[in-house]
Image (cartoon, rainbow, N blue to C red):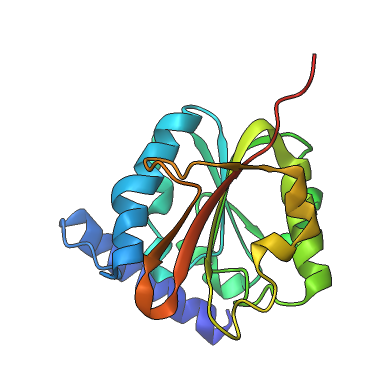
Length: 200
């Protein structure tokens, strides 16, 4: 077993034990508090028993699948060592390969927070990743995007991503706006999009 995977597995086990005791360890920054306290619970209510994909895993996202008590939750991360922080339906893959792992129009929501500009960097890869997202979302499905609007992380902002033109701006779950700067110091921005309903 690779050393980093072994370490992350031990960290996940320790954090899981602390969670069980009611001592949740996580980031206390305002953007995370908003995500965990308002946005994810509201998104969970929206999707009900649907299928949710959480893109990007880390120690502080380990319990995010638990927000979706009725939904099927998959996680995706390119780093195999992050698997211990994923859901039971975890996929080791790059976001550009999403269509190899999820059927067309099979996802009710995709949460992509802290990925754009943080590993998903080149314009071609970014467009491929979000074209795959659009393809895998069902009509009416939602995309929640979190990104930092400061250099170098905003080299390809969402309004420059051609694939996102296939989605409509939507209100962030639990809030009444399409876009919000949730943390001033790093300009962490949440934006919501929705795939148009199929025309009858």
